[in-house]
Image (cartoon, rainbow, N blue to C red; front, side, top):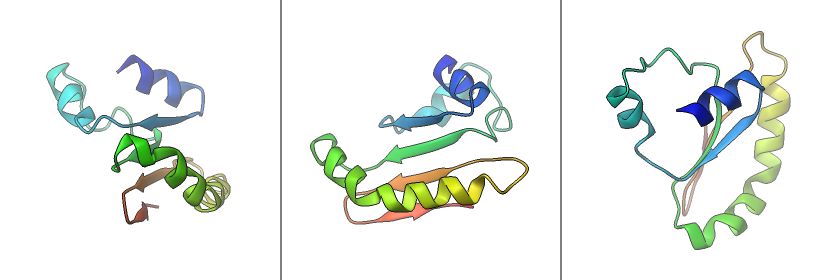
Length: 89
């Protein structure tokens, strides 16, 4: 959770492969509201595919980062799957 706090404090984007971040947060008593401004690129594809999928997703990620900069509470959330890219605004 230190990584999440550091990313949020520095307006950085966390890149994650672990799918149990919410479970870990609950285990350590961290509520769902603590990281509401955390920017995250979450990979849901196999690790060997990640570099190629990131390359394919980069224009979407850059666009979403620019769009999020126009908001008061900047936040980027992109999921990169084997056959999909998903963003939440």
